[in-house]
Length: 439
Length: 175
Image (cartoon, rainbow over all chains, first blue to last red; front, top):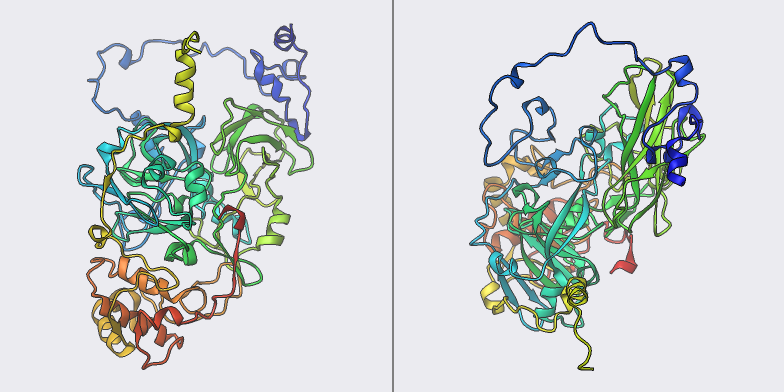
């Protein structure tokens, strides 16, 4: 009976300012806007018969050979990552995910973000080894083939660079796409061996509190992680969305530490050394320590806190005409499941609850959606997420009061600071053009 | 008890729920001795654990720097296409440049990172004496140690970095 009610509901009235509609409309078969039919706003239902349908050339000839490894349509050639170092200069390279051109929750492997501090090593999986040693009962060495025989688990998990969204520390809103601003986070299904299984085999000295993870790249990149996290939900992953991990994401194996800083999820993993103290490595005591307004700095931030941003519509896109649009975006938290996402179209004066795409998974992307009727007037779109642990995305004023703003306007691809998890605001003008604003 | 038949679906569910609690782990890891790991075991802990034998001074380090480091890090470590190694601009904003002298918390990190990652194009080709000498050179240029101080496994961990006390552990309960 309830379904029937929704399907034949009366025309929807907005539930929040500037035309946000009730998310429950998305459960029905269609959406009928209050006044839309009688006024014609947002509808262009005049006949298109001036150009009758006919067969196109591709419908009148045999198609292409089916390839062994398929790639997207040539018409999707712009759906690529933004590169910070396309010529491979001797510095870090970043490739950012085009969230505004994707939908759903899974990041395709070819578009998963990737940061490499000294290039991508060309690792022969037959020669790769993983050693676990230090404060263990029995040091052990594993091959890729031996790990592939272990009982495996699969789970969805976002991986986010601690420096994702660093452009949001700018004192003025950077006119940059969601890809440039928030492209250093992606979401995949990771399959591998729980680290706890391997530690059960090596045994752990009770005095071991940390382990230092190291990669087989030329920097031998190393980070310290608490044994507590290793025994909780850490994984030595071999597969990414069903296929072997991409070279830029850590082939042939990487640590996955659900919800924690990407840099700690060491790629090309070759060594885990259990210790009674952290290594205080370059990347944890320099790069991934965050300066605070009082001149002190955070160390061991670990967790990527609750966050959301709107991907559709967003900067760089334009609304062609008033009428119906779906506002949608991504929410995630390093502390568990997303509990609620609220969306505003009037810069935070009023809010509508977004529909969350099921299944809502812990420490993974959740797609949120709100139906919206744009009346052609200026609007400011924002999203704000809550997680199941009760954490909420701080408003910008709160966030800036605690964490500060950069003194200089940074490049959108620069890193003024890290761990930004406040709101993102997209302002739409009466022409339908979208700017990035602070609101 | 013997009357109860195992329920296959329940057993399957248990197997998936608790892979770490297998009665008998697969045991496919091969025992390895710490001596066989030596070539990879390059990490240095802040208390000096892992520091090798050998030593070096700033004067020795200056020569190696001129040969192997200056092309990227510039004359006197003032910076080039890669980061400046010398200089301590005051931290006045959250986007301040982080340097060895104004930010790094541990002297051992200098040794660890130079040894594992430098020179950029040919990492792990420096001898331990060369790494000590370069570490001494960087610390002396920054006036953190004296020009004639010898760096070795005993002296290096005792060098206190200027910014050492300015860090806050964000999530101590996760450790």
